[in-house]
Length: 406
Image (cartoon, rainbow, N blue to C red; front, top):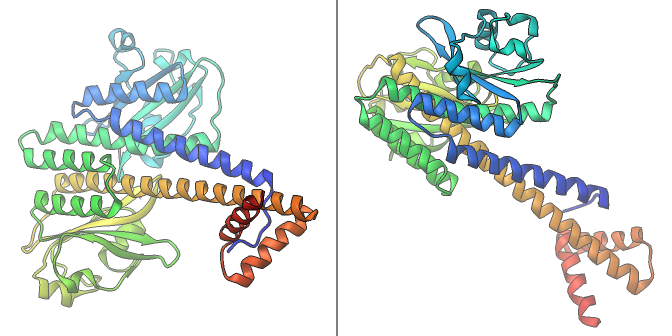
């Protein structure tokens, strides 16, 4: 029930907020649709092109992280001519900073040698693409003129790179796991599900079902973080066990899942029934669970939950297993946050409509009874309190009554 008087300035702010949210949602949908190739070279080129379009930069160089040699090698640019004229590597110091900090930064131009492509420009913004604790690639956004990026733009770019990281990670998985069609088909199906327009609950239930089948696990679950209570709650699982589905929430830092969220890193346990820090051993024993892998879901460097898989026999999770599940976790995080953006946009739109309705009702009251704006507002507010109805409902009733009298 509204208690605060709203003026035209607040309506203007709400309009601006709604417009920004709608623009951000559309941008994320556009990226989901247009940056998807399973060919790593094509995916990186799509990313270079898309970042160039979003930022209006003079060039965008995308370096892929070569883990074997611990270096970042140029793989894509706004212009193909760049790659035809030189094979470049990201300066080691900058690559190490990107890998360590995993956040956007503006390196000093002095860090680039005359031989580097960046040396011809006056401004560079370094954007790391991450998957869990790993930096997959780095995009250098280049401008001929001095240019600084405000917090709002950096926030949007960070969200964009998080979403684009999925494309890079999936492309790398495709190269590494060509023989494992089932895993690739599952990841592809999850990606399509995310942009299918289905409801969040339906999407997450499909993700856990597909993931359990792909990983050969008995149980797969998605837990979402309640920021206020600092607890993790199961919001999706393919398990039919009521004992598992109804088990109490887990505090951040508690048990395996809580620790994975707190530390923002994957945690594997050989046998949960013998793990000292595992909370619900009785449920694990009754369900026949043994090994567990918990991977945090992160968005813009913040943990928002985790995805867990359990096996019935002791299993040593490989780096490949962790990488695949991290890709699923990243995609689940994107769909959860995108749905949150949509809810915020809807809330902003509803708030704007409410304020418009109240303003119209105030105007009619002022005209009919020759009263001041403040008195008209107090009349609506008092009626709202007395009738235990929202101010919007009262305003709508006033509009209906007074407009009929015309």
